[in-house]
Length: 330
Image (tube, rainbow, N blue to C red; front, side, top):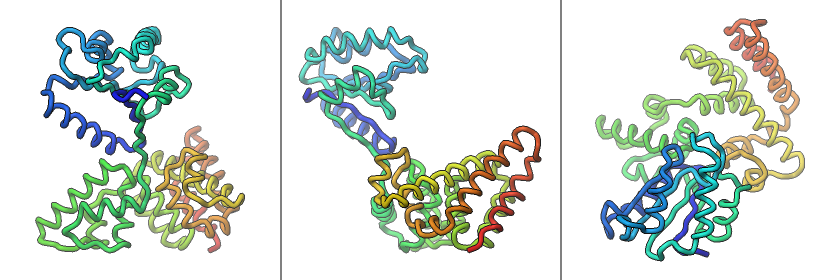
């Protein structure tokens, strides 16, 4: 283990940024603003990066070097594979030459796990993963941020459902609620206030639509009409709807094999824990409506093909989707 070598990877960028902000603030307080250098593969400067890492010339003082985008060796960032390979070759040869007082951080949300650099970091770096937080953690976090305002568990859950789980967005909507309550001298966040102030994401609206679909098809049709009246993008809605139904299918197959533990499913799939929580809680309804859900998934794919190939009008999406919902026998 190399004590001054770090590798950060993340699903939740907000948590990563908070960690980097803390480290950078502490480092600059001790050693000055010139002690920290950021490099990104989109604007790569190999010579300056090596100066900072190894403390050459003007960089002879203590340094914190952050390299964002490695390990990867694709050319999608505008530099050649050979340039990356040259840097990696030299780094792996000189890995023990990094001055003990200098810190080096590699950061990449989706590292290439086949690469030599990744394998080296996995065995030798201090690794920190910033994963998407689960529903329970989010509830505690939001309540702490809204510490001076009352909010019931049901309203809190609706807020989470509306804003999804990306912490930058959650914090933005929390700030809006705080400001609104302060401006209007309110001490409690109600369901009506959340509906009025918090901006809906298409993703979260689709989740609510599917929740209604499994419990009250009349409400589901009315909610779909509301989405249509808002002039929401049909492609965005249909895309998330297919994805959500596909998620239902995935959850169903795991449950059929006796697997309902969120962590187990998350480890075996690409699905984050919050999305799983939203669906596993409806597992009995998913199982009892399995055939209809599978048919709806297939029918919507067929409808999308017809629209894109000019065999059906764009507006037919709304009518046909309502018909599919109405066919459910709850």
